[in-house]
Every structure is written in C-alpha cells, then in structure tokens.
Image 1: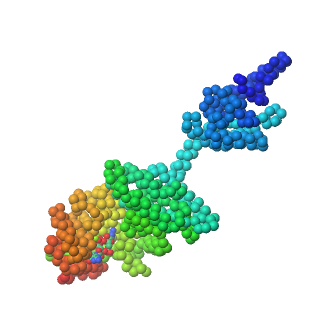
Image 2: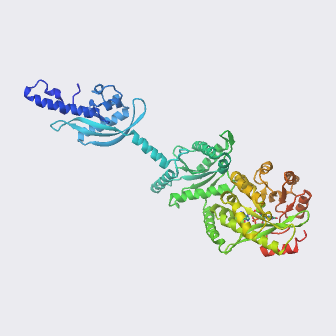
Image 3: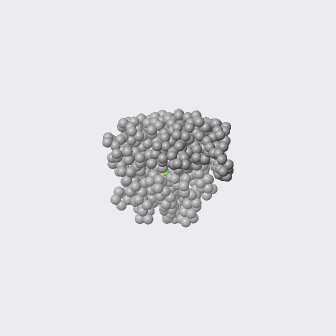
Amino acid sequence: MAVSLAPLDPNQTHGEAPAHTAEMARLRDEVFLLETLMDNSPDSIYFKDLESRFTRINRYAAERFGVGEPAQAVGRTDFDYFTDEHATQAFRDEQEIVRTGLPLVNVEEKETKPDGGVRWVSTTKMPLRDSAGRIVGTFGVSRDITQRKEFEDQLERQAFFDTLTHLPNRALFMNRLQHLFHRARRAETDLVFAVLYLDIDRFKGVNDGLGHQAGDDLLVEIARRLERCVRPSDTLARLGGDEFTILLEDIASEVDATRIADRIQRELSTPFLVHGQELFSSASVGIALSSSSYQRPEDMLRDADIAMYRAKAGGRSRHQVFDADMHQRAVSLLRLETDLRRAIERGELVPYYQPIIDLATRTLRGFEALARWRHPTRGMVMPDVFIPVAEETGLIGPIGDFMLLESCRQMRKWQDLHPRTPPLCISVNVSTRQLAQTDVAEQVRRVLLETGLAPACLTLEITESALMQNLKSGAGVIQRLHEMSVRLHVDDFGTGYSSLSYLHNFPVHTLKVDRSFVSRMEDAPNQAEIVKAIVSLAQNLGMEVTAEGVETNAQADALEDLHCTSAQGFLFSRPLPAADAERLIVDGIPPY
Ligand code: C2E
Ligand code: MG
Ligand code: MG
C-alpha cells in the first residue's frame, strides 16, 4: 500500500542494514495488524495531515465517501465529499485540535450520503503525534448512529406527537405553553399570546353513524385544514378525541385570536368527503388570552376549555373568549356537582308529577315524573340546571335510578289506593347519557319487579335528539323495553331534525310535540299547519300524539280539533308534589 502512515511507515526502513531485518519484520507484522483492524472496523477511520488532507482512510470510510478504493481519498479533503458547510466546520475543528492538542469527543452530525439519503454519525477526533510527540495531523473515528437516531426520533414522536394526525400532542403543547410562560416572565414588555380550545361539533354522530374509521379519517382531514389556519410559529395540537388546541404566540390583541377562530370556521365550512359521504363539520372554539393573573399553563388551558363549553352551549359553530364571569359560573357549577352527589342520600331529590290529559274525554291518563331538587340554600333547583351536570359527571346513573324507582313505586301505590280502568300510567324521562351509558332495560326490569307495576303502565320518554345520537346503542335497549311491553314516547319532537319515517324503525308509541310548536300555534297559521301535519303523519304511522306545554284554552281546542290524543301543560296543571297530584286523582281535573 502506497499510503504513508506517519509513525509506522515500513517503507522508511527500506534498504537499511540486514541487522534490522528482524525489526523490519516485526514492524511489517504490526502494520499488517493495524491494516486488518482498520479495514475490518465497522466505523470509518481516517487520518489527515496538518492541512486536513486525507493521508489514509479505511474501507468503511471509502464507502462512506463514495469512493471505490481507500487510496483514492489520499490528498483530498472533506470538500470533495461533503457539503461546504460540513467541510468548513470539520476543517475548523481540526485546526483547533492541532492548535490546542485537545480531542473532540462524540460529536453527533447529520450528513448527506452519496446516494442522497441521510446518515447520522458520531465522531471523535484526536491529534496525531509522531514518535517525538509533535502534532503532525489528526485522526478521526466516525460511527454510524443512523439507526439509533431513527429510533430516538420515533420514541420522541411517540412521546410528543399524536399518532393519528401527526400533530403535537398534549405533552408537547403544554411544554410549549410552559416555555411561553417563562418567556413572558422574562420579557420587558407584555407578551400577548392565546390558547384556542377546539371541539368538533357533533363528532360523536360521525363515529356512531359511520364507524370509527370514518371518524379517524375525518379527524385527519380536519387536522390538515386547521394547519392551514395557523402560522408556522403557532402550535396546533390534538389533545385527544375530537379536541384540538392552538397556541398563538406573539399576537397583537384579542382580535388576532378571534380572526383565527373565524378562519377556522370558514375552513371547516366546506364539506368533507369521507368514505364517499359528504360530511359537514364545525367547531366550538374557546379562547383564553395571556394575562399576568395566570400562574400555571394548566389554568390557561382550563379557561379556554370553559370558554369552549360556553361556545358550544351558545349554539355551536362559534367562538367565545373567556372572561372572569365564566370562571365564576364554572366554580359554581363545580359546587353544584359536589352538592348533587349528596342530594340523593340526603333526600333532597323529589319527583313532581304533571298530569297528562286525554283531550277527547278531558280526563286524567297519567302523570309525567319531573325531577326537582330541594337544595338546602339555593331553594328549588330545576332539572334544566342539574340534569346536564348529572350527565356530565355520571351522576345521572343514580339519579335516573332513583326517579324511576320512586315514581313507579308512587304510581303503584296510587293504583292500589284509587283503582280505575284503564289504569293510570307514569312517564319517566331518560336522558342521552342514560341511554348511552347505563343499562336502562335492566334497570327497568328490576324496578318493575320490585314495585309490582305493570310494564304497560310505564312509559319512558326519550328526547328526539337523544334517540338520534344513540341510534346504534339505543336500538337494542329500546327493543328490549318493547319486548317487556314498556312504552316509548319521543319527547320534544320537532327539535331533533329526525324524519318521521326514520322514527318508524323504532317501536314508538307516542310523539310528544314540543312546546315551542304548541305555543306558536296561535301566532301564525303555518305553525298550526306544522302541528296538523305532525298529528296526521303520526296517525298514519300508528302513533299517538301528546301536545306539550298547553297554556291556553284556544290551544287545547285547536289540538282537540286536530284529533291530538292527549295534552300536558299549565292550563291543566303545573307539575305537583305527590300529595297534590293525588288530590287530582281523587277530585279529577278541574274544568278548563
Ligand atoms: P320535558 O320532559 O319535556 O318536560 C316538560 C317540561 O315542560 C317540564 O319542565 C315542565 O314543567 C314544562 N312544562 C309543562 N307544561 C308547561 C307549560 O304549559 N308551559 C311551560 N312553559 N312549561 C311547561 P321541567 O320540569 O323543568 O323539566 C325540564 C326537562 O328536564 C324535561 O323536559 C326533561 O327533559 C328533563 N327532566 C326532568 N326530570 C327529569 C328526570 O328525572 N330525568 C331526566 N333524565 N330528565 C328529566
Ligand atoms: Mg319529558
Ligand atoms: Mg318535552
């Protein structure tokens, strides 16, 4: 080999006295050993002179540089094999090593392979000295660590990125937010930033209706569109499920944040094509702006979340900026939740009963049980306030249980005390979550057994929207209830956008026309027409109709003319405590 290796060059001894032959042989063996070692090393090894020209490289280095034979690299520099930037840095490093005599250990660098791919190497460079200890160049060993790097990258992606959308996950988002908190503390002037909390409206419907794969595909599509709404310096993350967050850094004011929220709505308003289906989507967006009162990033995220809930409650597809009042409301809601947990055991929860009237005979058919909460300090709390809290917290399970048991027991008692034909019936409300998360059919079976009430005397009221949201999970429950002869009434009909023909798939006994239609009946002729249409369609499908919220005689008369079966409303009676309701059973409905 023609390459010179400074401290151990056997050629230098060429032509000397035979006395040195033994020494020569030893040196040759040594060189052979070193060459074997070098050429079989899985690392690239190279030697350079003081000007950073290669004096020798091993096989692996030749491969790394893309040259056929190691000898071809002699006299060349990094500039021949690497980018200028890389080569310049290497040159500087080596000059530094030559100057100071200090090594450079395990420097990790990324380089472009001759085939264009990427390689990571970990390099250690040392000064090369001659036998007198003078520095005559440098040598380096570079180990290919591409696999390890890829593995590390993958681990990092798993730890900080969402696998479905490849967006940053909660951990990375909180990391960045934390970072911004630090920056804001150090900054001289006020740093304004915002957290946007997004929840996709009615996403559950997609998952339930079209399956999880479609849901996943939609989420990926949504992620791509959201990316178009933010600047590269912002962080868009997926927190999980259908919830996304955006961190807007360095904005001028609230206006910038609301403008982004508007842009998001616009982006989402174009329909999505998922599994051949056109889907419409929108998001409810809560916005929290940076403020010195925030001590922790979590608090800011929490407030954006609270604001998002307000946006959703305000009618979806909108945004809401957090304000202090919301915090108050959230706190009081939390207190309500704590109180609600104790309400049942303390006997604060009571069913009220509102009579249901047969319009043709003007007699009592039964009652609807409506939950009331006698709160020790707040007074009477209405179901509109605490049922949503109960649903959110899972307390709807025990509350639903209690209402069902208590009202069935009460009805059985009344039937025993005041027998009549046909027997009075009791209607009990079942909420969305109850239908989705509890085994209502099993619950009903137990209660009927325990109270001895005939199944035909029990009606479950399920709102139209609850039914539509639980088409799959609800269908089985409803079928089993039907097999037990328990009746199903569709509550608040007309507000849930279902079609009557769809409802026909369920064993629906009665439609309860929502109060909003009844109350407008006298206002405009077309409103009366709607009720008329509902009644006749229901009749054609073999269902009965109950009108909700009847308040005037005119409404009652009009409904009777339409052959609406029964009615409920303040005109006949408000919901009453059990004792007062019992008086109605005995005395009959007062004339109206
Ligand atoms: P809903 O099932 O549609 O009940 C009818 C609501 O309309 C009741 O309100 C009733 O008091 C009211 N109402 C009846 N007649 C009239 C009228 O002539 N005019 C007016 N303005 N209102 C009338 P309430 O008791 O506040 O209940 C509200 C809702 O809360 C119920 O609507 C029902 O969806 C839910 N709810 C009540 N009790 C329970 C329960 O035990 N479990 C579940 N899951 N939900 C319940
Ligand atoms: Mg009801
Ligand atoms: Mg209703």
